[in-house]
Image 1: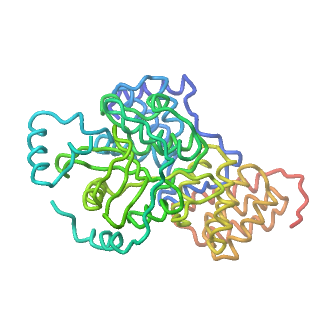
Image 2 (image 1 turned 180 degrees about the vertical axis):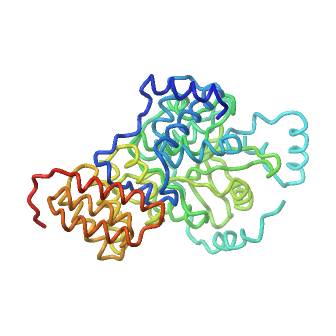
Image 3 (image 1 turned 120 degrees about the vertical axis):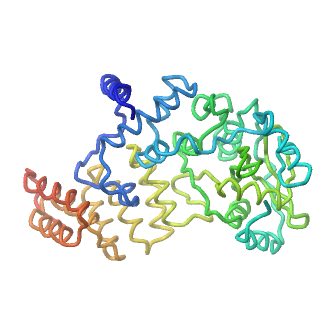
Length: 122
Length: 301
């Protein structure tokens, strides 16, 4: 998180009451997801920060603010940690229409020699 | 560029198939622009009895600047509709099992190369062993025929990710206990206890010897303050071999809530004696909470 901006995200999020994670009915019960994941030392604050950062990234990528808020509200702590750590590298399935320029030429050649099938699959 | 050595078993498995399958009734939503994620997901949900248009899914799973959809968000969108998003084992055999059981399979393809990836979501609806051809709902094609070789390559290059939807009470045919419980646990984490409980109960029926299924059921019941039933589920977990410190922690809390304070303290101390350093903090907190707990319940179990 980069300094002031990150802090502001948290402050604003707190102000808006964005912490949508269910308040545990029984605070002492360790949940199943946490039991199944190796990271038993996970803190609620980590989840909170990850949620704020993923939401910020979605908005930066053009997702409507209210939609982004709803979307991150239904991701689990494990999913948020994973997304926050690698959202830039994760595949975003789209289709073949975005292929441009040099990439287009390379893929066209590969297509012709039968390695890929971008164009036949659109 | 050709398939790695690990694809051999996949090809062989496909060649051994004898029965063709095609789920012709699976609906089709042609893709707009880059929006194969919403189109493929609408197809998958439609086949599971949930009529959803791709347009409705765009604000839920589309990322404009990435011109695509993230897997985790597709998973979340399935959950929002009360279905369990189950990621299949990374073997094509799993997809065939699901097809023969009547479930279409959403898959992520990389239609480019590893260095120049072109990501795409499509839905497998059939396979013909005679011609070694898969049938997909893909892009603007209602019935795309794709050779097994092409499909395996694009699937392997995309990390072999395949998804089906299932009602919480009905784990898919190829499901395994661990991944099913993990998928269901997301509901619990998000406070949706009903679907979580239904999925865990289904797990205890399908895999009654799996201790974690009982532990999970106990966890969700405890979070709903259903102490006696949670206690019974934890008993089953213990009987099936779960004696981990985190189970002890939860069981101790349930015992305390039932008014069995001495048993609860014994339980937490048993757990503490086997706990890792990270778990010790959790169990220590619970121990303090049990000591402080004012309960009118009279211990009976």
